[in-house]
Length: 82
View 1: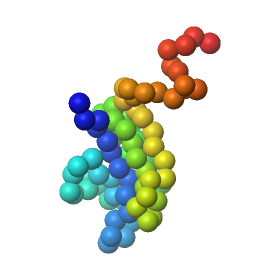
View 2: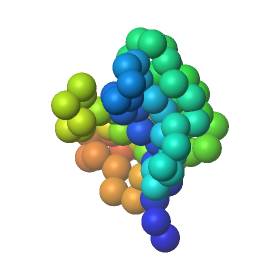
View 3: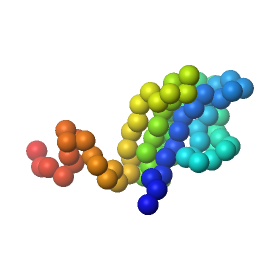
């Protein structure tokens, strides 16, 4: 099963866009990266997807998993009781 993703990417016409993985069109465009990231995080949590935030040059800056991560990081094991 392919993982669901949402991306925050620089828009060639200016600003920042939020795109669903594989989509050619942006779902929404913002003037600031912060506003785009905040919106994308809400969408990603709602749809339980992987959020991928890109730098201005298009490379990946950071990721956040809001779904069922098949390989969670060992230091982030949510199944352990503290």
